[in-house]
Image (tube, rainbow, N blue to C red):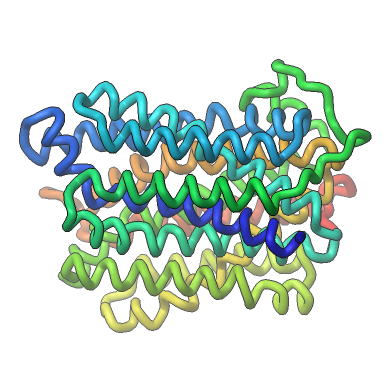
Length: 405
């Protein structure tokens, strides 16, 4: 039964990621249909919808994580899936921009179950398998990002609302599957009393940061996430400006990157962790990422970039290894709260990275740029990755900051 439950968790995370990408190809047409105006106006509203989705994830990830610590993973996941399915129906029939805004608010809240799903995996994972299982979570999410835009683009041929109906059907089917296979992993002795002062990003961070060594590790995680999000933030603009790639080529390269990450986090990570341990995997992984980012900043050949892409994806071992280190420092009744904090940090990255990285790209490629350098965002990301590595190195020199193997 546990294997079926893990399958349900991975499907849920894949659908969460697919739900984001599934609707992207149709959003411009849908916004113009309900709001009118041109593509520029649609892009403006599209940015607002995306930011609103990320803000809701930031605000509610700790809430859902804390609720799952109190009431269990099963009810939080199943209820969220039910509401998510209804939200897709709302988006499918929305006739005004305000209904789309409401839909994205609800969608951002229900998609915040990443923290609860991660807490479930922490519950069922022995210490030596935490990094491996967190890798499966990241691989499932990466697979969803690859599949979402592809399926969404195909369904868009049926109309701008077809992807929403498909997403609703897939979510509802997964809800039924989960109802029959998902056990409860929070035992009565591990249930934590719900404190609303902790069920928000600020309160949850305050409590989690009191655990030995976790403040430094969360700083490491923050800079790592901001740095790593340079890929989705500027990849399309960078490859278009630097190599003249077509949209099809850009999509294919993103698929290559996504598949490479899925292979790394789903298959290779168990061998890497077994060989180096979690502590050294994070330590050398951060340095490895910094090296690939500086190559991205100066590379001048599109074919060399394609060759480099799978090697760059190997750096994705850092996130699950670091998550496992942090999970090992939290009590069993704090796993949901911890994963909620990490999800909020991810959301901050989703909000900040696109703004910062695209502004850097504009500064170094726009009219009057003092030097033309499309890879400048990757060099900034390299600096942030080195900051992450330095904070991690300092934490290892402190007795309370040392990560376990």
